[in-house]
Length: 275
Image (cartoon, rainbow, N blue to C red; front, side):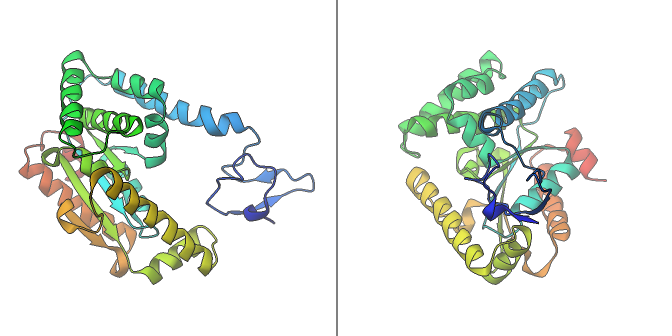
């Protein structure tokens, strides 16, 4: 068995956080789902292909979309990512991970491609909204953040998506966004990470401290907000006393009630999810 912490041949080695223990043969051919020797594929092609796939999907969609999104803010190890995946599958929604959104926001070329999926009227409205947000000083005006804001607002225009992290709940209009916060006690989060990432207890504690600290700093710097403020969200859920499937079911029920109240019951995903 080859511990990923000692893996010196995979192109992911510098940034891998999964810490899989994977099998290998005598020639060090590693049997890992994320294994790659090609740094170019890792850094560029995978992200680009995921973005291109989503762009093509948007272009092919003929029926109108209702402008709603579920945003997921979560504590590290709380199960927020897993709940997001369950919801996306059950509701037939697109799952937009924070890492992909960040990649797009860091590339003006990718950001432009995303924005070009909107029609002229929507683009005009998007520009006005972005400019008003920055001029009102509700967010700080870095080039990266402007791209990030444009990308997340574009996702909001298309709708039918779950956006994980990246301060999306602070960017998207609250009238069109179901904002979820997922939390759990520290000891449970540590156990979850020790199990899912094969971390030691110390490594799990350090990971939580680093990731949560980064998220808090990001929101405070750009939005002058504290992620622990409950009034930023439509629903908060503690995964301590229920499994992730049960937590996802509770969120789904709350989202469908919110969608009905806000007049989005005609949307196919909502109708399907109600059964």
